[in-house]
Image 1: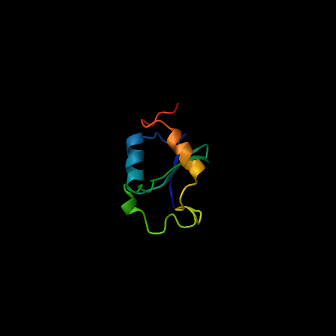
Image 2: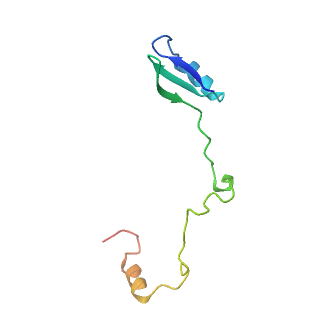
Image 3: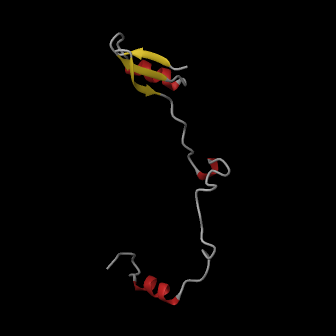
Length: 89
């Protein structure tokens, strides 16, 4: 259950609030007894692909069956029109 702080009754010290959240506590800030904000810890983001859980992209990516098929001559011509330095004309 989250902790509650009524902003009208209590002065809130931001450093203390962040320390509590940093320890994993969720805090609901309210005004006149009505919740106005929830402050909660965030899940740490994976730093590298190696840290992502297995299957995280399942059902989120789709590749055409011919994704590795050779490009048509017309498509190759389009690629060859671009300058070698990578800048658009």
